[in-house]
Image (cartoon, rainbow, N blue to C red; front, side, top):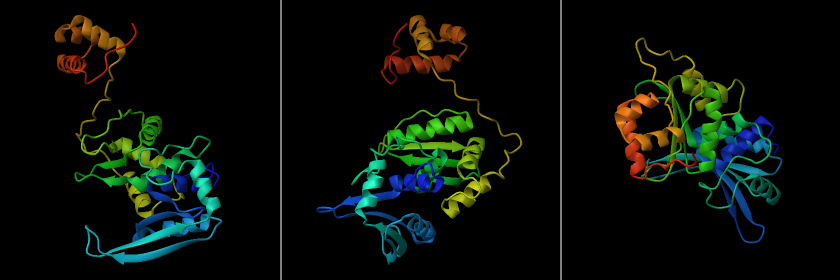
Length: 266
C-alpha cells in the first residue's frame, strides 16, 4: 500500500474514515467496510487493489431508518495486511477522534477525496448552491482539510466543534466548492461514482445575476486585540483599526468574557 499511488492514498483515506479494524484473540481480527449496496463497485475495486484474499458480501435487513436496507461489506482477515494499515495510521477499535493524515509522503488530494467520499458530502444545497462538506471528530483531519482547501480556494476556515455532539462540520460553498471539487474529483480518479458525478455537475453552476459575493472574513490579530483592550472604546477602536463599531464591540465582549483568548506578547 504505497500512499504515493493515487488509488492507495484514496483507499487509505476511505478506510480511515469508514473502515473498522477489529482485533480478536491472538492473531485473529479483520478489516471491514460496510456500504450501501449501490456502492458495491468501490468495494470490488478495493478487493482488486489488495494482494490478499478478501470477500465482498451482501445482505438486506430492517433498520431504524428503513424497512429494508441492502448493504455490501468488504472483509479482509490477513494479519500482514491488517498490520500494514495499522502502521500507516488506522487504529484498532474506536478511531473517530484519533485518525490523522499519514506521516510520510502521500498523494494528498486522493487521500482527502477518500475521506470526503466516506464522511463528507458533495452536491447542491436546498437553494441550489454548490457545496462540499466534511463531518469528522478528528481535529487532525479537520485541520488538514482546512489547510489543503485554503491553498486551493484561497479561503480560511476556523475550527470549532459543534455544541451538540462535539463534531467538526466543515463547509465550502459556491465558487469555493467548485474549486475544491474540481481539484479533488479530477477526470479518471478513483471515487464513488455518485459523488464524482455530483462534483462534475458543480462545475456548471453560474452565480445568479445580482447575487452578492460575501467579502473574505478578516481575522483579528493579537496586535488589534491589544489596541482594542487599550482603547476600551468601540468608536475609537473602529476608527484606528479600520473596522466597524459593531465588530469592535463584539470582539471586546468576547475578550472580556473569555470566549477568545487574551493576546500574548507585545
